[in-house]
Length: 536
Image 1 (cartoon, rainbow, N blue to C red):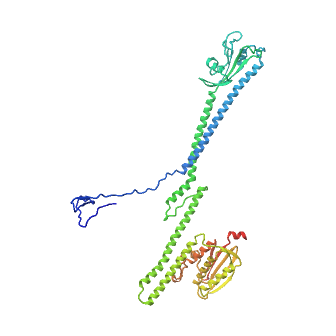
Image 2: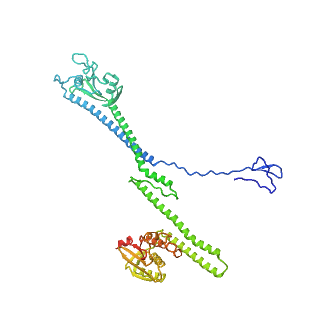
């Protein structure tokens, strides 16, 4: 927007660099500079919403759920393996302690057959008979040093300091480590865990005394279990399970991405097609060949909707074109007569009569159009239970005044029916008027009603020129007329369209049987309503 100060009638603009806003001041001789104020508002941009691909969302959900399940599987597997190892270690410790208790309970040296008289000898003989695994160590210690008969010391028999251990070389000789031995023997618990350079060691100990020497020498029997190997096996197994889980998760995510893409492809096509559809182009459709899921069904329904929309838009355009054409003709006639109307009173009366007739025709066209528009509404008809005999008699009485014809009432249906009597009468009067319009005075027109195979039938039969078979479907369309009829004798072409609308509002139809030169029969078919069928 440009704002300038007021200029008087005698103001003159000087050439000051061709600046459009520099204006001379007539009174002071100075130039006035009026700045240009430009008010620009930024064009509003459509809101941009961050949209996440449904394919990505589905894949993320599947991967998340799969990952959660795999995490639970790994935790459960690790817990199960750890519990199994703990149980096996406990069983191994209990088994060795149990075997020693059984041996000590017998209290007899298998080599001599004599009872043991020394705790150290008892432990030494038992250790000589054991064959522990690589991850086990068995040793004993007596409170007082004892030596084997004959002197000397050897692995498995003693070392002169009250220490005895298994004959095979263990992974780590805990019995030779005073600190480790002190922790084990000094612990108040019968079981425990000791950290060593070879990893954790689970141990269990038992106090050893001879039955007949309650106050004599005593010692300890100890079994140690190195758990590093089992822990490594569990770790290796869990690593394998985790690698397999990650591979399975990757495969599941890839499969979910592919399957989601296949499933959502019709939906993507629906979105793209919807974005490309305009009022001028409703011909695009979605290819759903091979799809049998709900998304494919959605695409099929979308195609059906497009078919209906295309038909509706086509019908609307045709309707507007035909209506404009039909209304343009009487308007042209009225305007032409009014422009040529002279001063002669007789001529003016004739013009007024013609103009009034055309305006009446325009009014009938508009009323018929409004009636057809109402026919699309759910409350177009108001059914009630009526007697077909009374309704047929009333229709016969009303149509006889439409023209000098040989009216004959052929049959009367004897039943009660659920229908809208006013709309049915309107349709029959329209059919009768159509028969009068296409016949000559004295021609025979038959009217009747009957009940046949669960339908109520109302018909009008004339002996007019008939309708060619190729035009049987077209005559019920809006603004259609039978070929060969002079335009002056033709109406707006809405009568039979109204009859069809009334029949369809009753969930029925209009049947036509006609042969050129043999007349026509229009039959209005009204089926029973579901409630009537249940009553029957």
